[in-house]
Image 1 (cartoon, rainbow, N blue to C red):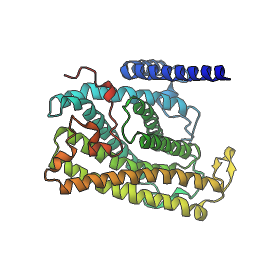
Image 2: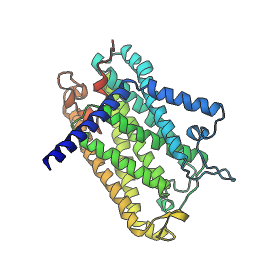
Image 3: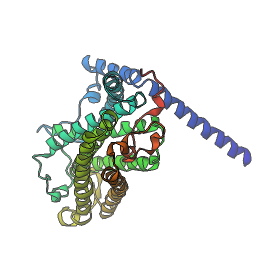
Length: 361
């Protein structure tokens, strides 16, 4: 028995070590490896080889121009995970870090400035696109349409692109989380990522994409302002950074605390009023027996608790801004104690200090 346990332990350690080596290898070649995959797929697509178009473009278009889900969606997700990995690394290395070198960013913060600036770029784009696909839809400011006409299994072209690209981004975030040095709120970040991916996959697979669209929009706006505030904290701490922080606070309280809270309330109270029929029948797209409501609500509430945790951190920073004589020092990111910076504790730092041994100067 002891021998068996020892062998299992050795095997587990070997598998963990192998995974770590693979992750570190990919981290060191974040542009080259995905780019080679992207070029192969694009070459197949340009040459018209069978199946390659499904990696690049969404699939399963109906005669009326709307789209439904397809197993080819997995190939689309794979391709855009590669795109996000290469694009993120290239944008940071060739645009954002050179920008940091030409500004007042500390050498040790080049990588962190690039990370947060990339996040600002992505979340601003995703929020804008989310508003674009949602603006003329009936569920714009009417939560009853989250549940009316369930199951809704067809989408406009822009909506399907939006949902799958968001899905690919969050799947790619798993890799990003693995190459980061663990922070004090690392466990909360892991829980946040798991919760988010469960909500995205279940909402898409089980035809709850309307409510998913609303949740995406609520999350992306404050994320954009938060990334902007962190970037400005490295670039020019002081009044401009504080203004960005205030905008983030207002958007956070309105979208994440209030609007997202309304979405949770809708999930708990409105399905019984508007869902035509609670039943499980996958062949007809019905994935909504009554107990599923509580699974969805439970995941949403779990995410909401994490939001409240980070909300407390935000108000801690706000208190420092209002009470410290020199508010800019609150988030100055002292090189002697980088882990104690309050701004970085708000929803994690999302930086990759493990890679900071690259030549930056």
